[in-house]
Length: 112
Length: 112
DNA sequence: TTTATATGCAACTTTTTGGTTGCATTTTCG
DNA sequence: CGAAAATGCAACCAAAAAGTTGCATATAAA
Image 1 (cartoon, rainbow over the protein chains, first blue to last red):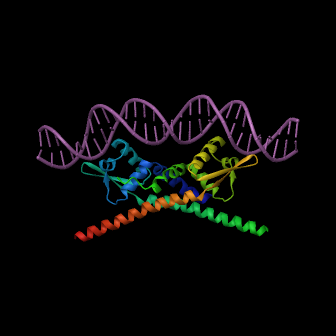
Image 2 (cartoon, each protein chain N blue to C red):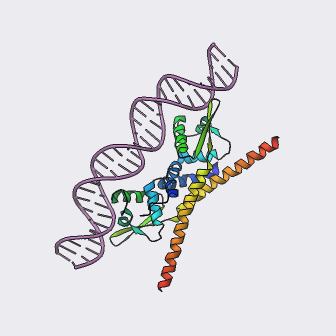
């Protein structure tokens, strides 16, 4: 299982960042394409603007979103590269699982 | 406003379960195909067997693994269906992002 | 039937997380 | 300039998470 190590270490924080409904909602919102401000993203949320800010920083630490300043507002946009890497991690696991099952099946059939 | 599709919302707990390095390692280990016992899975880990047991239950609550008893040992195996759903969730987000970008690009070109 | 193996259960400690409130700072605009 | 808008910062809180230790229980094996 050495081949997975690197992917795992880098992907775990991404999964952790996505593992909260509020944050997943933010990510889904940012799919709209255009960067959005904190106030925009906090509009309609069940928690305060400061809570949203914290969540955005968690996502930023995992490199899922990137923020930049424009005038008096802080805009955030999606970083699809990290999402792609997370998907790749799941792909790897699924594929190894498939391979292992195939080997097991072959071994069992070989015994009979 | 979009209350986030049920599909995406149901993925948050799965991501949360995968969002821990120790647990992601367990998942990777269980890719081997054959179910493994707690003692096996705890071998070589940096934490105690009880900690591993807790992690396995977290994964089980998220339906990422399933456990069953054989003799005096508790065996755990991977539940690839949940992993596939998580992957699908990432696919959805990426695709929505792609579509949004395409629309933005079209809009900008239409203005010129 | 002892004995060793594999696990379960429960109490407890320490960090981390998610959230809040209050106030300061920066920028825009009339 | 002065007020409104958009954030930033810091202290504080409660609950959940991660991990430990100690002991009980069940099963396999000698």
